[in-house]
Amino acid sequence: MAEPLFADSKGRPVDVPDLGGPVADTHAHLDMLDDPGLSLARASMAGVAFVATVADPSEDARRTFDDLPIWFARAREILDAAGLAEALLPHVRVILGVHPHNAKNLVPEVEVEMRRLAQHGIVSAIGEIGLDYFYDHSPREVQREAFRRQLTIAHELGLPAVVHLRDAHDDGEAILAEVGLPQAGCVLHCYNRGPELLDRFLRLGCTVSFAGPVTFKKAEDVREAAVRVPRDHVLSETDCPFMAPEPFRGRTNEPALVVFTAARIALARGEDATAFGPVAYANALRVLDRPRG
Image (tube, rainbow, N blue to C red; front, side, top):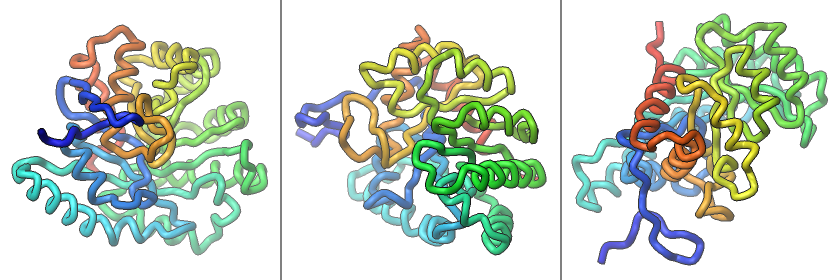
């Protein structure tokens, strides 16, 4: 018997949900995975056709650009060896920006590098940018200024923004209202709070992406929030390698597991997964795979 693609923490096989077509992982960190090529191959097997991966120019963003062909080559070898020569690899785009943890490192040289890399055709958004008052790895005023600066860059480059907010939603909302959402869009990534807070960002016009927490057993408030998002503004993501969805909690997350998150969002919304899947996928392509001018 062939080894199952997915097994839970006790080694029991888990069926891949049917989402009615291809699935998108709108927020991944491929460069943090032990074997990105293997992860892309497994994503292909699970029906994931689009992955947006994050690169931070204050760290080693160039590695993602340089290593993507290597990751693709390894994924192709794995699929071919598995007798899946006809399988298509996921289309990968890059989200480029200085994380709020690294806001103190958004010096002029890093901005120059960011703007240079942003000219690459695979860059589809500026992010993840925003505020993180939970860890406070950068001073809060420095975070706020870096957030404003990078939102402005997104406006200038005609790219959407992908926003990270943790314990900082009031200031985040204020800055988004002050600077304005880029015309290309704004994604509130990995939303894991309740519906009342979410409504404020929906009024601003944000698209909202849900990750593993929407599947957690005690996360009813997150699922209630997922119900509130208009159908054309909802996305699914992994934020891998972090926060694997149920029934894989405690394991390394990977793009393939986004199918479980998307299926749980559909269930929470009372929608058939095969009807919800194509809508969420179309939303992902509209926001994060737009043609560059």
